[in-house]
Image 1 (cartoon, one colour):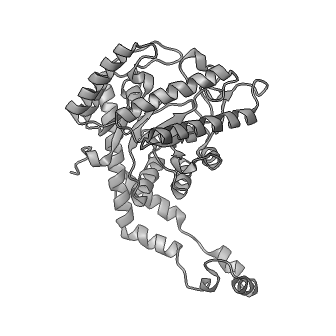
Image 2: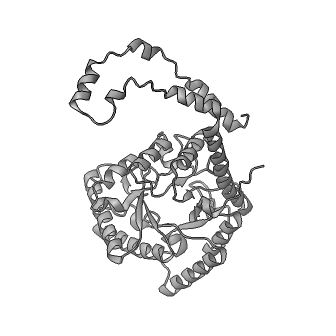
Image 3: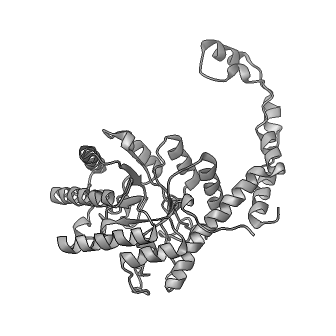
Length: 388
């Protein structure tokens, strides 16, 4: 039997807010007692995780005194040292406190925007102190319920000004840190600016330091909008901007469910894992997900182990798919090239264009050719079901 035990080289990470989620939802009170950051690190070490990520206030309460902050950080560092866990990523909570009810970087109130920058600089310092190399920005309140309240053009410009400021701050401090922007179409705002990974990629190219900024796509956030997550990830990879990734699962059209990875759409999860492994993605596999509200902390451990185990099973299935002779023969046939179009390939030249215009294609033969995608998809299902 294959060993699906997580190892450090798999780079599996969880956030303090994920396994530490107490099961509160808009209709119900918490079902689990809160754990301290140290206890969460210990839980993650027990289940075999590589690292732990955090928002600033996951670790340090927003109203902590300097002395309280120092004690919390010291205890957290000791827990990391004792367990061997690392902190690859950090982020700022700019969505919970009432001050951010109308956004942080895009708020209509200039004092709120300035406070958001201050809070983020402090959080960046904390993340770097604890070893983070990637800093994620999720604008959970950067949106609107009514466009009467805020110009989207103003919001775009304010967000750009904030990102440029923070990039310059990181450069000025000499930090070895990259930014990753995380998109979401809605919730908790009715409409969130830069709603998809594609929006974020376009926005990044307008920044003063686009080389410092990439994306952190999340399964649930793209699927909430009915989009194909794999396609967004592929676009980010092609652009050299896949700096981080959030893995979970989601039923299309529902609220942000943050299910255990692979628990809702196993075929989509398979092709995502296959893509990440095929292209050699070297970043963290971060599980931004929550255990069911029905679980105690033993169930939370089952949830965390399940995320990692499913990824490793799908990684094995991807290798099997890539090595399957019938699948590979089908792919070779689907992609066959008899060389007829070789004279037209590559960069444009006037001679190629003229030759292509003069070439006669057998349009009926092109339309009549079967592509065997039904067979290919069925073989994929059989690999996933374990009958091949």
